[in-house]
Length: 190
Image 1 (cartoon, rainbow, N blue to C red):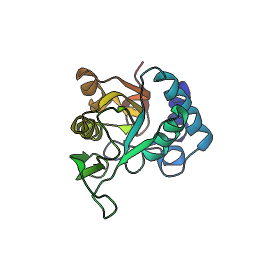
Image 2: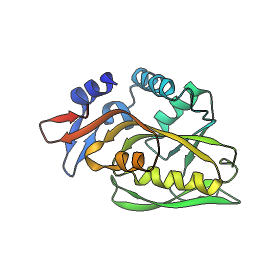
Image 3: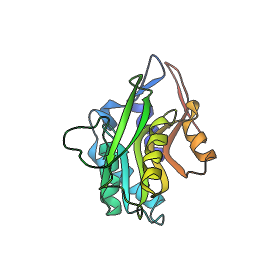
Image 4: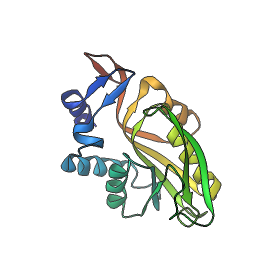
């Protein structure tokens, strides 16, 4: 999506440690018109995949995942980063390492919301090393459901997570793939 690359170049900032800050439009403040455009693009890419659920991980992926779920006309499920008192009964869990926060989370989804008959599209704002998506695919596998693909707003191609998932046979479509980042330049995969 050329518009995503342009938006990153115009509004993004590379922070120390390989962090791409796009808080002005994607995950702290949300450009809702642009969010709608992203959701339409993703829905067009996955219109024939048969998804009946969208799954993401809390928290910053929820906005893009909600918009995509609305565009596809299917429910959104999100994995919580900790089991809370409002998650009861049988659950699926997986341990995920967060690149951004440098910590491990045990993500949780109630078995009420992922069923064996589900065809699940993963949606997230970022894909770096792929740990979050691997954790989400683990939850889907535990449920006996099917992963039909992964849609990402921004993939950090330089960190290899997307390529590793593709090598496992998962269809990964990213609106922009950042190939390299320095303080003064961002390049995209062609």
